[in-house]
Length: 162
Image (tube, rainbow, N blue to C red; front, top):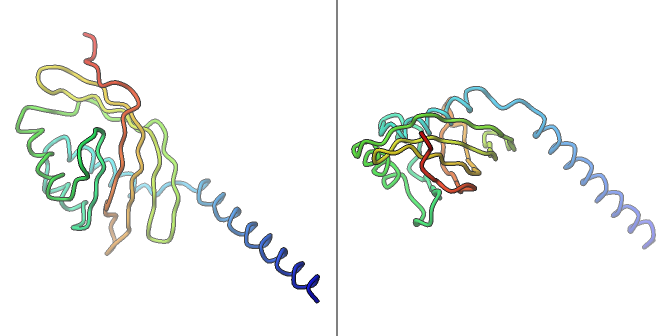
């Protein structure tokens, strides 16, 4: 009897592993929703433009952001304020690219993993920021909202050469 239970248990574990692996493969291979990618692009551009209206529409009240540097976690209010200050101090976005993006989808929740490159103008100099990202999106009331991100830098933010 124990042998039958053990075999049934192993079969159940193997079946569960096969189903989990198949669903993960499908999630990784599926195209990323174009509206989600547009929301991500809009959030980044709005942040650097100081467009707190657009950014505020994308970030829900429960937003948590982990920035590129050693600063504490940011909530929605702090992120909107930082965006506004960046622009008020003359900062601007010169170029934005996402050279690699992958997704995991869990119903109405998508986690994006990828790399970014942003060239910004600030303090009279251009700087190139390169790093990795993890961004969360939730499809809520017919649109994508952006409740969290974690960014890091993989290359020094050295001034660009003329």
